[in-house]
Length: 555
Image (cartoon, rainbow, N blue to C red; front, side, top):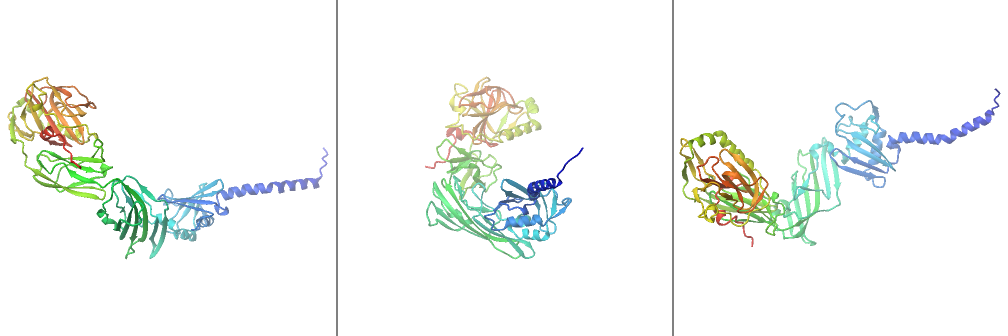
C-alpha cells in the first residue's frame, strides 16, 4: 500500500490540536487540584464551626480577622501523613467550609494546645500535619477558645432558663504561662421575652465579681431601677408592662485566675403582673388542710415553696382556669400525727416572695380511741404484714399523680345528714383519726384514715363530689373499693363494697352511685368506709362537708 502523507501538514495539525485542548486539560487538572487545595482559590466565604457549636463566618468582603488567608495558609503549609495519630482519630474537630461560587469544600481540623501536634483531613480523606507556625497562628485567635475548657465564657439566663447572648463580650482566657487570649463576641439582635410572669432577675453560671443593671419601663428613658442585679427583689413590677434591661457584668482578674472579662446584655420582658400570695385560713386543726393560692402566675411549676416544719410531702401548685384569673392553688394537709404550732411557708414566684403563717391546733374531733369487732378469722387472713404492705403500696401508687382539672365544687356530700344512704341518714360508727383496737386480734391497733358508716347491705353509695375514677378494684384490707380524683391532689375513697358501678376513667358527678354497700375486706358487717386524701395524706372530711374546699379571697 502506498501512503502519500504530507508530514509537514500532519505535524501542523497535531500541534494545533495540542494547543486547542491544552487549556481544557489544564483547567481540569487545576479544578481537581484547587478542589482539595483552597489556598489556590479566591474563596468568597469561609464558615467555621467549633466542637462547642460556635459558628463564625468570614467573607471576602468582610474578613476583619483575616480568617480566609489564615486557613488557606494552614492548608498550604501542611505536610502529608499516612494517618492521624491514635489519640486524635475520632476526637472532636473544628469544621471549616470554603465556598467558591457553587462549590463547597469542607475540612476537618484537629487542633490542640500543643502546636506541634495539630492535623487536618481534606474532603478526600487525606491527612496532613499542620505546621507549628500555622498552628500557633490559629491558637492566637479567639477561635481557639474551645480548647481551653476552664475558660468557657459565662452564660446568663433569665425567666425559664432562657439564655441571653451578650451584646458585647470581651473574654480573656489563659493559654500558656501568663499569656491570655481575648475572645470577642457581639450579638446585635435584642431579645424580647413575653409573658414571663414576674421572673425578672438574671442569673449566671459563673458568678460575676460585679454586676449592675438598669431597668426601664416601656419607652421611658429614666430607669425605674439602677443598682445591683441580686437586689432586684426590691423592684415591684407593674401589671402588663414591658421592661427593658441593660446589664453590665465584670469578672475581675485575680491572682491565679484563668479568665477575666466584661459583658453587656440587653433584653426586654413583659410582666403580666406581680404575684400575690394568700392562705385560705390562718389556723387549722391536725388532720385538716388549708389552701395556699397565688394570683398572677402563668407557670405554676415555677412557684417554689418551703416550710420551717417537716411535712413529709412536697406541695404541688395547680393552675385554676375556672376563676377567670391567672391563679394557682396548692392544698396543704396537716396530718393527724404532725406537731402543733405555727408553720411558716415561704412561697416565691420570680422576684415576689412572701412568708405565710399557719397555726396548727390540737385535734378536735371527738374520742381518739375506739374498738372494732371484726372477726378473728378476717383479722388473721386480711390483716397480715403482706396485706398492710399491699394497702400502703396501693395508697402510694394511687396518690402518686393527680388530675390538673378542678372537678369539685361547693360542699362535699355528708352521708350522715343528707339522708342518701337510708331514709333517716347514716350513723357514724368510727370517726377519722381514731386509734382502733381490733378486739379479736390480741390487741392489734391501727389509725383510722376515714369514716365508717353503718348502712344496710346493697345500698347505693354516692360520690361525695364530681371527679374522675382513678381506681376501681380490690385489696384484702379495703375489699372492693373505688377512688375518685377530684383534682388538685384531692381524692375520696369508698370501701367494703359488694359491687362496683364505675370503671377507671369514668367521669362521675356528685351523688352518682359508685357501687353498693357490702361486706368485703377488713370490716364488721353493715359498714361502708369513706376517706379523703390530699396527696397520700389522709385528712378529715368534716370541714369539706360543711364548707367545701375554701380558697383565699383576693378581692
